[in-house]
Length: 284
Image (cartoon, rainbow, N blue to C red; front, side, top):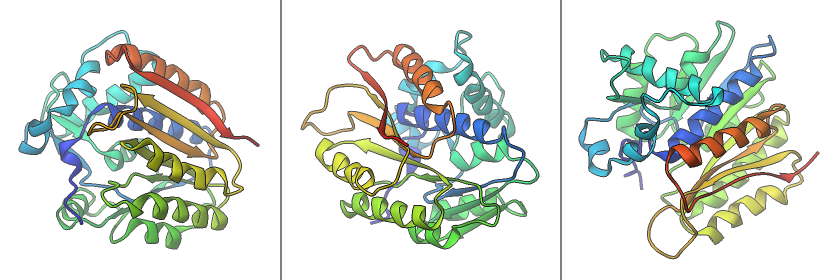
């Protein structure tokens, strides 16, 4: 049940989208001086070596971050993302111009935290939790928890800061994950209605994904934004045809920024059969 390791997929096109939007969301939130907490329900290992057996087995990063690496023609919404990946490579003993490492969400957020902000990271996989705990050892702004992140989310809200950004990025290994995720978000939002929730989702079976998203749309929660990047038409064949972020209570202008990010990525990643969607599924 816990066989999933994100190292196989680190830096792929779905990571590029997720992390570019995550960084832009933080930047928008930090326009206000008040502190916030970042809560990650499935934090992973913190960072990934692109030369190890996990990454090399699938080499998905070559059609993701590899397509952007070294380019000088990126829009402003992607420049910061690429700078963060370069900084992570330097921090792991590499050179900024060499792509050998890829930062997970916690590492990327850690680069953005102000002294007043903090993180709560949940990870259930034993090996990944150990790596994550070692990465943030003695970091007073970060709490690393081994356990079920969905249960941890409900225990972590509402935060003392009254401002928060929640990333829910499960593996979806188990079919019940789809319903469990939606139900957990609905419960968390009832406790912490002003929080920003970023739900990452894959499209392997379109009906299964839409069933989860429909639970959120029909929950009565306002301000729900779909940000989705499809690399090919949906089909019954094995594999992911699209990935997206479902955002509850997005900061002002995130929809406009997401449109620029998606349109740029579609061209940069070479996806002639792809389709991008930025749509308010539920308004005010």
